[in-house]
Amino acid sequence: MFHNFRAEARDNARTPMQWNSTENAGFTEGIPWYRVNPNYTKINVEQARKDPDSIFYHYQKLISLRKENDIMVYGTYYLLFPEDEELYIYTRTLGTEQWLIVCNFHEKTRSFRCKQSGQVLLSNYKDTPALDKMTELRPYEAVIYRIERKDVSREVHAQDHSSDFEFDIELE
Image (cartoon, rainbow, N blue to C red; front, side, top):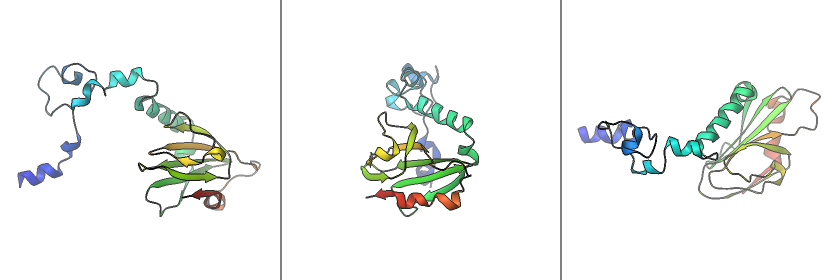
C-alpha cells in the first residue's frame, strides 16, 4: 500500500529549490529533505538571472503585461478551435482593444496563417513575426499579439467579433 501512495504522491514532482551551483543547489548546508535534481549545476536561479532570455525574465514580462493591461484580467475571453488538442488559441477583448493569444502545446510545427494584422507583445521565441507574416507555429511556441483594428471608433464586443478570427485563421 505504501508503494502505491508513493507513486501518487505530489513529492515526486518536487525537489529542493535550485538557487545556485553550490552543494545541494544552495538550498541547505545540511541534508536536504528530498534529493536535489542533478541538473542544479546548470539550471538554477543564479544562472537564470544572468540570462536575459531565461524563463525567469520571460515570466517577469508576462507578469508586467498582466499588471499593466486590464485586458489580461478583465477582457472577455473567447476560445477559438476548441476541438484542436495541440493548439490553444483565444482572444481577449476589452473596449476597443483586442489581443490574440496563440500557443502550440506540441513538439511538432503547425501551419498557421492569419489575415489580420497584429504586433507581437510577448513570445517565447526571439524572431516571431507580426501576425499577418506568421506562417507556422514552432514547437511549444506561445505568442501574444495586439490586434490592429481598422475601426477603433466603436467599442469591440467579443461576442460580435472574436469569432471572426475563426474565418481569418488557417490551420493545418
